[in-house]
Image 1 (cartoon, rainbow, N blue to C red):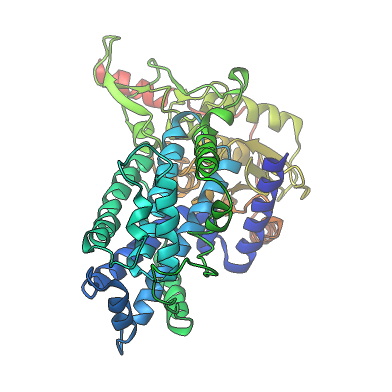
Image 2 (spheres, helix red, strand yellow; image 1 turned 30 degrees about the vertical axis):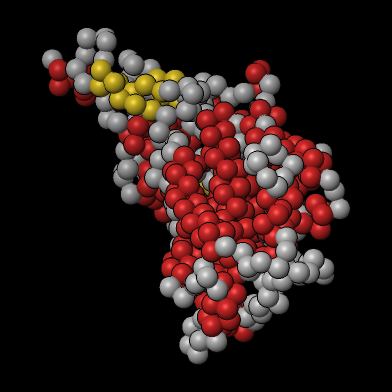
Length: 515
């Protein structure tokens, strides 16, 4: 129940932000890419700061940086705000993946590597705060030493390093500096793992959103620079210290607990996060079946292999005596979203029950069941869009599909030739497609002659694609009204009887070339 409520809250928020900014610039859809954008800002600002940092006089070097006329203070603040923004974006990204059930099966590696990425970001932030060596840095250092002393790792208590009036050795700050610089290498490795099972990963948000984010962070750094806390003093136990709400929110609670209890609580959180792929996995009888390939129909065009968003299809040598290659699906990598079904002109690949041939059978039943008047619009509704919502009721005949990318162009052709005034395909916003690239390939097939394209005999003026998130019914209503007005300027469509759609054309041509 909490997961369902959280999912509804996020989808409603998507709809509100879509209306405010438009789906192209909705930052919620770009949360993963915004994490990387913030990390890039951290890298650039960190390279600047490292030139002025001195491990022998850490706090004094921070004071000198703050005193620089043109840089310094605002660059340090930008470094800090970018780190905070990275955490916020990572939390939003994780919540979206969790609520959208994109955490199990082939996507489990992305979730687990994402947990490690967040852990490394936190350790990197911890060392960064200690490097400043103000009261906050001292608090983190002493608390960390207290927790490490509870583990049988060192022959002497680490806490003794911070006892007495002696100056801390430079080696301590060198170690923090080394970790602060070396940990980003680990970030790169786990980032590679994070996207290793997806084709064509998008690592940065669109340029307008990217530079708007950088500009807002820079403006905040200039107008609201982060003040330096008092210098660390080993002769005083840190009392009331302002902690960072994103990186050290846990410190007040941890200080009131025994080290053993802190480790138990932290381990429970980590184990719980790592177990999410197992806990969210549906029962075996509810798991969608992976795509299958009909070797008899495969023409070696490789389009399904190219279009698959998860690299789940490979082209292998045939064993049926025919020339060329044949597509083969790796069930362990297939998320069963059916993008491949829309990519196959002869309709020879796709999840069971959702291939192009299955869709044609469904649309024939749909046409027999529904009656289209002159100028009537048929809505092909992606299940995750506003048109696929249970609350969608716009009066137009609705043909449901699982994903816009699963839609075969022959379904659109059949509806137009059956007499529909127009066909409006309502898809998720491209950056929020649960199948990743569904709306992108849909548009390419319908309007730009990508393989499995909509045939030239179909009047493109009677076909339109609209994007509307599940709670953005305003965008759906607007798209439907605009399309209806555009269709009113066209002649009334003439329906055909006994419509036949080629399903063997590519195969027959390939067979003819071999004879």
